[in-house]
Amino acid sequence: MSEEADNTDSRGVQPVDFTLRRWLASAGILAIGLVVGGFVLGDGLVRMKAAERSVTVRGLAEREVTADLATWTLSYASTATDLRTAQTSTDRDAAAVRQFFKELGFPEAELTPAGVNVSNYTDNGTVFYTVRQRSVLRTKDIERAQRAVQRQAELVRKGVVLEDGSGISYTFTGLNAIKPEMVAEATRDARAAAEQFAKDSGADVGSIRNATQGYFSIEARDGEAGGWGIGDTPFKKVRVVTTVDFALD
Image: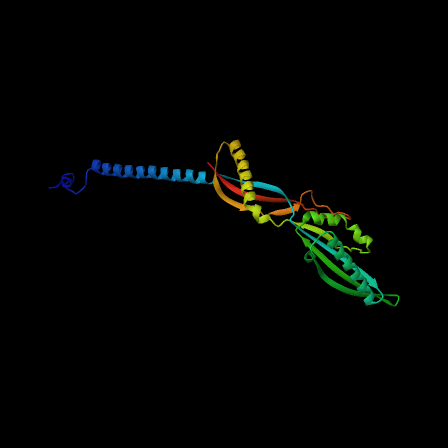
C-alpha cells in the first residue's frame, strides 16, 4: 500500500494536517508570485516614469550677412496728347537710364527692359496718352549698386522722373551654405538652456528625443523702415529657431 493510502482513513478522507500543508504550499507559491510580479511591475513603472522625464527648449542662432544680389526696378512714364509724342519721350528716358548705368560701369546685359504699358484718359474733351516703361538692373556688384543709388538724382536732372514702385532691393542668396552651421549653433544654444534647467531641478541632460527646425528668416539688420527717401540696404540678419526635446537622466 502507498504512502498516500497510509494517510487516508477507512472512509477515504485525508487527515487535516496533510490538507493544511498543501494549502500552505499553494499560498506560499502564490505569495512569491505576487511579490515577484509586483517587483517587475514596480520596476517597469519606475523605468517608464524615468523615460517620461524630459525638457523642451528652444535654441536661437543669428548671423549678420551682406546681400549678394541687388535688383533695382526703375519705372518712368511720359504723357502727351498723341501717342507718338508720349512714346518718343519715354524712349528718351530709357536711353538716359541706359547711359546712366553705362557710365557707372555696369555691363549692358545687367540692365533689361521689363515691359511697356499704354493708357489714356480724356480731360475737357482732349485725349491724353501715357506710356510707361520699366527697366530692371540685376547685379551682384553690391558696392557699385550702392553708388548708383546714391547718384540717382542725376537721372532726375536728365529729365527722368521715377514713379512710385521704383526702388532697389538687396537679396542674400547664400542661405544654403550657412544653414548647417546655424542649425548646429541653435542646437547648442538649446542644450545650454536645457542644462541650466536640469541644473536647477537636480537632473542631467540626456540625448535628444525629438527636434524641430524652425524656418529661416532674412530681415534687414537694422529693422524695417519705410517712408519717402528710405530704401533697402544690403545688410541683413539671418535667424533660425529650433525646438529640441531633451531626455533628463
